[in-house]
Amino acid sequence: MLRHLPNLITALRILLVLPLCWLIDSGRYDGALVLAAIAAFSDALDGFLAKRFGWQSWIGGMLDPIADKLLLTATFVWLALAGDLPGWLAALVVGRDLAIVAGAIAYHNLVGPFDAAPSRLSKATTVVQLVFVLSELLRLSHWLMLPTSLRIALVTATAATTVASGLHYIVVWGARARAALQARREKKA
Image (cartoon, rainbow, N blue to C red):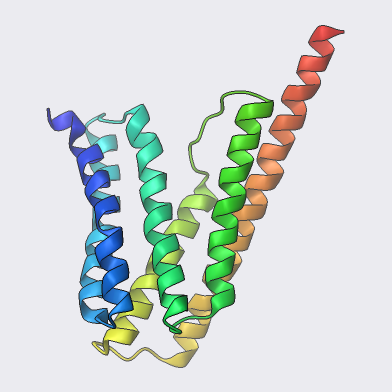
């Protein structure tokens, strides 16, 4: 029974998305900060439990990145809609995720099954985006005033890792698709 605990934690993280967006929309940044911190902690906890006790599962491998994408995409979009962060940054985050999902669908339909494990760069991007979201909510909640230079550095790091990760997926999976299709053509010949 405990083997399903990481998946339950991930599912609960998905359930936090709507209240988090509502809190941002309502300008209740202190509550949004608490929920975002809980979500970030739950992401680390479910991964730790799954790896530490060998409780990894196919469904967990699919649910965890979906939960991360839902949480981060929704938070970036709602903060941008509220005028609290640059719209271009939210568009960059959403665009990267759409490109990854579209690429995965295309790969699956044109080439075949694939390993959906995130790259190290993708994991780093998720961490940077989470840190940025938490710092923005911390700033907006007025619990701690962050220097403008730190915010600029976090915006820059978030944009840079998001672009780098998106390009990395395109290059790596594009090369794998070309190699698989070439092998398929050679096998037919």
